[in-house]
Image (cartoon, rainbow, N blue to C red; front, side, top):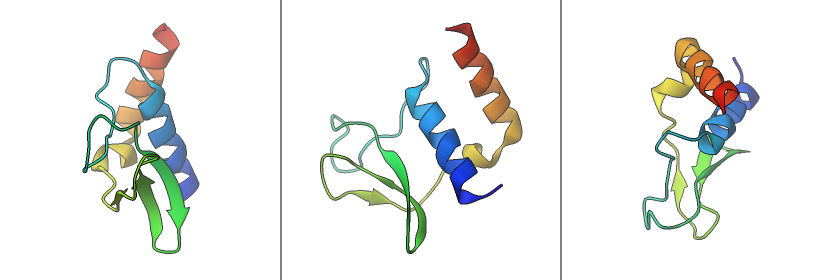
Length: 76
């Protein structure tokens, strides 16, 4: 699994209903974080401020979790 695959998983997660989205560490009322590949690798960025999260939660590397998430999206 490469960074683009993980990036897509994060995007799918952030768009799913019924999950708690990844939010800004400076202000949780900001828009949802979005994934981007930078020189240092895959990070999560806040679209409203300069917050950058370098930690990507382990669940995005779990194929079972992603299958569950895809199943959730298909129910909508």
